Length: 231
Ligand code: SAH
Image (tube, rainbow, N blue to C red; front, side, top):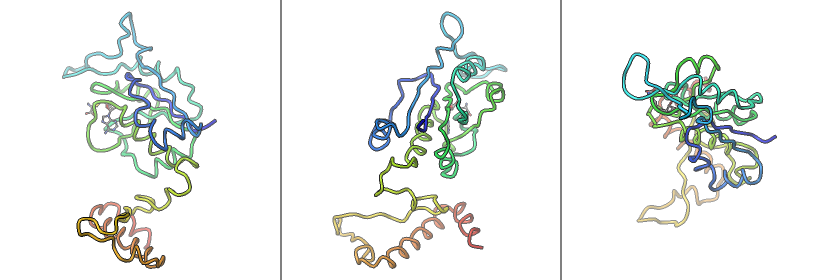
């Protein structure tokens, strides 16, 4: 069975979304990965299939009910896949977690809405909470698409041989070096001569230097990790 993402959402129409374009979409058509989308509302309570209620203790907005969310989770054949709740309070997603997820059988992803999910559902199903960054989205759907896209591009055969993900940003706690392509001169700016000189040793040391310079300037947090690895 290929790598499979199962998404639980109140807005199934948001999928496949960006996951249907370019190489990621082609890979799904080829069967290199698959996507299952489940509507949480099917597990709503009462005649109106209610999925939310007002927050205990008061305050604005609504909270997704634990019984509804857990019923949606329980209806999925998990098959050894991690159960992830997308949440701004989760562990920030990084390339290392993406790589480990991509190497596994897939993921079951629960998308929150409103003010979030009743805490008891998170605990009762031992959900792994993952955030895609220190900002607040309106719902987990865009976050789930980010996570899935990042994983799928690492599945062997998805990017093709020429676009190997080995030497890119974060692979060794370094940001990627700057990229250039034709034309040779753009608005008076030239491609750095070393890149068009054909000396592969010089090219790779220029790229390493630029990666280090950028990482040091922009991401002191990554730079510290990178330096540690050489001590
Ligand atoms: N009141 C909550 C935010 C709720 S946003 C809080 O302050 O923590 C509604 C839903 O959007 C969340 O349940 C979650 O599923 C999703 N979401 C919002 N921001 C996110 C982020 N940075 N990463 C992952 N999911 C996010």
